[in-house]
Image: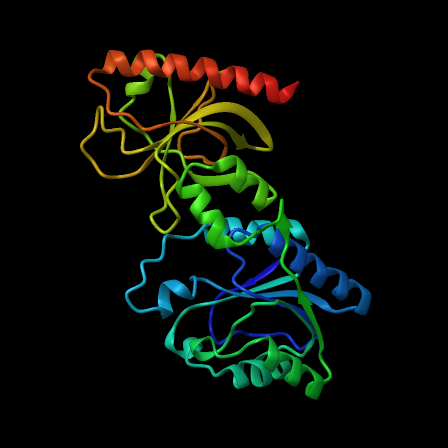
Length: 312
């Protein structure tokens, strides 16, 4: 998949089907929309293209709005799009030249003119252009005038619940990771480079791989999780602690500490994927390191049983 991030984009002259949206998390609703775009691309011999943004529009456009953070890093979003079979992904930066493009100019000059768009696939709540003034009603009019095929994809619901990125962020923040994974259609992932920590876990018998949490992402509820680590196409059952580790640290830095309990493997300086599978308990400030160790042993036994049951 070709990735474009520098604006103005250097666009090859070829006809495209374009999926338009931010696609944070690439949840089941997004997957339905993008799969529809890929099908149309193959049927009509078009380039399967995603037009999206580096930064979430709400984090840039709304005054006095505290954006809770993204579900995915840029790298994970790009990787997921590639896995889905997208040919090109344009990630527009949230700079003034982009933010100030009117909805009319964005559609006519960019999508139709520069990108040679022949089919446009959007969600029914799509907004675009300066201040988000572009909407589906305008798209119906403009696509008809320019002979562009317009596909409006409806909401995806699970158990009568509409899936949205906003809802998934709330589930992650409150520790409802199993339901978040259900709506995502895959396990929530934290990706990072393994760094050297204080090695306290090693002295306690739980050598962990440590990742610094990306501050631009939505914060999972602090606590202990059933997890697994993906590295070099292998999956290792694990237990993960997310938080500031108040028992032994006064730092406010969020740490992701994961113990792969059935295999000893040196992953320092390697990039790994930590998948969160289930929430075990909230973070606790213990009276002593010994009481913390005793609780970790109980958590570990529980997580081992949960992994065993999930494999049966």
